Image (tube, rainbow, N blue to C red; front, side):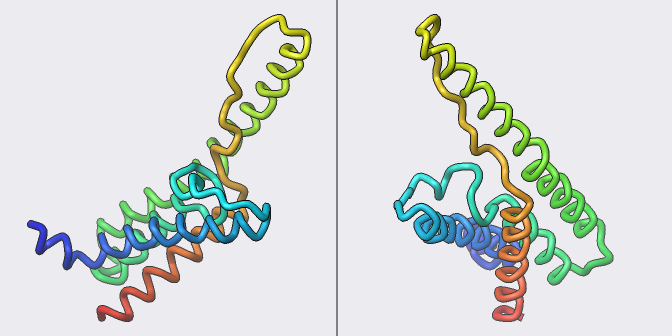
Length: 149
């Protein structure tokens, strides 16, 4: 079983895209904020979108290895579109809502009527982060395919 997993180029591509895009977040965040945030590797949000890179690399590697005219490619493409929409749409809006709720809680806390815990405001991605994730995933998928092919 492990032998099959180790030689599964599509799985290796997907994992490499997820890992490398998560790793890329660290120096990019440092360049922007001048602070190292190692927790960002596993956190939602950030540049590039690891979710976008993962599903793009998976979709493209399915097409490259199994063919673009297969049911597997259609499923991978559909999954990619849902994840990209969710990353830039639904999750981003949830982040905006968290930001507003935190502002309300902070205003209320200034008068100390209640106590509350701040919500995570970085749930989704900007369109730029999603696009960067797509390009990262595509670059990794094509690179691995060229290496193995």
